[in-house]
Length: 194
Image: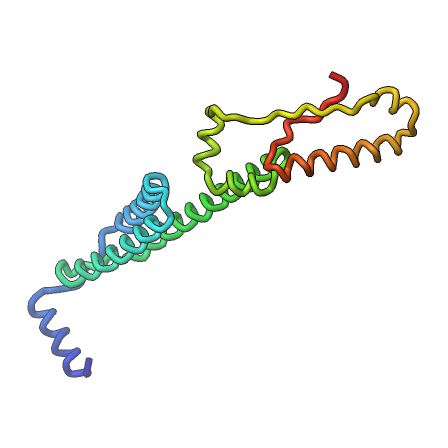
């Protein structure tokens, strides 16, 4: 704005008594609190990352335009920065934490399932998470159950050195587990004499 226009504008504001007032003292605290509560409400209530991000952006833009409206129509200067910082920092931290916890839970569940299940079956179960929880409630299915035993194991173990026995047992168990996994099976447990 050229200098003479600026002076004319200031003079007009002085004569009309239209002075710019700072926002109330409690504005910063209220906007910080509203930002934290708004972010918490989005994170807890929505649970969909894309909708949460859209909500964070919309609330930030809305607060910016609200501050501009207060400046233009109420001659009051209220900063949208405290609200925007609180909302976005809490919202993005909540999203990151939620993502981290879900990834940790997925890895933990995947490692647990991989101990007893073929890798293909683990991937299939991880893609269909709802199916896992449905399965845990119980399902009726036709399955094959294999009980495998090493014939004469006790007498064989008495006549062999410990290292040779462990080597032969590992060879047997590795081949059996590989066969079960190739057929999308689940190893329930390894037991000694039962």
